[in-house]
Length: 71
View 1 (cartoon, one colour):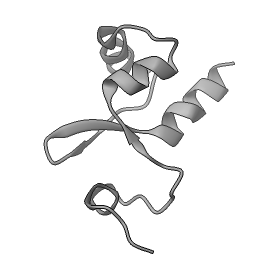
View 2: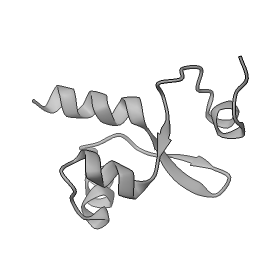
View 3: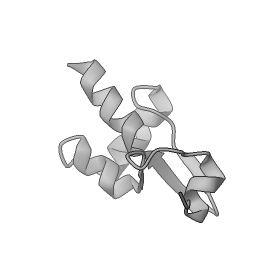
């Protein structure tokens, strides 16, 4: 199985564990504003992002898990 550079950098071994941008994360949380995402990260309400090559990304599985646990 081959991994992308991003998957190697963050240690992802699952095909289901995509990395998503802040705009994509905002869509998961009901299409909220990106500033809301940053406020929630700061307050600890949602998972912290990972840095990959200067980009800030979230593991999709962590976002989905935080949504499931909030219900």
